Length: 241
Image (cartoon, rainbow, N blue to C red; front, top):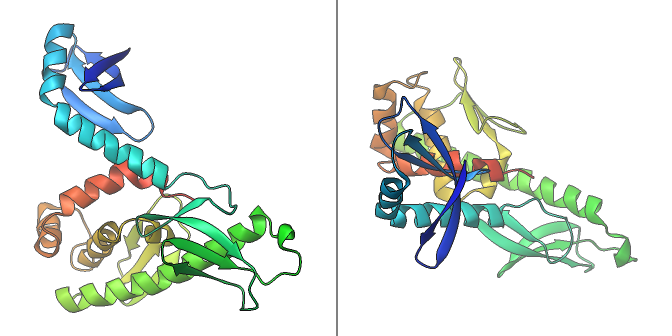
């Protein structure tokens, strides 16, 4: 059932899911569905509205976070002027045609792709995409190896090998023989989110499970890991190029 609620100046649509088995109201902000409310079947609309208004601040905050992430990491068209993400910041793309070698660089508040080409109009989306994705992967190798080294020193946990991969469904993994694998797309996310995945996988070197002891180990390194984990769960779907 689709409904809406007025919170301040905003009218937010939401999907209402009722269940006879549910005894309490639960609220979630889904990356694709938006605001979803789970309610007991017999709870009146009036009482439901009061519950939602009590949670108004949280709803607005989480809705804004989801909207910001979606706007930041939208599917690009690979053309000049497009906003491209890097470590949680959106950079407008500028294509230059200087004599310098082909390459990508961050310059003040923009991402610059230099393609020394005699006919600039022939630099189309496919060429831009190829160059930018190559740069992303190279940055991912540098950033992830650097952060792994930092947290290895901090935790005393050392990987046998660190690999950067093009994974579709996993942000990271740890094998029984001590190999860590990371998704290059983590370089698109804010640095604290990348750090969370690095710490998560390093801790698996000691405990290859998700027991309470494992999460205590993660929490010893990152006391706010739950917040970072929640961000990745809600916004990870937008980290795709």
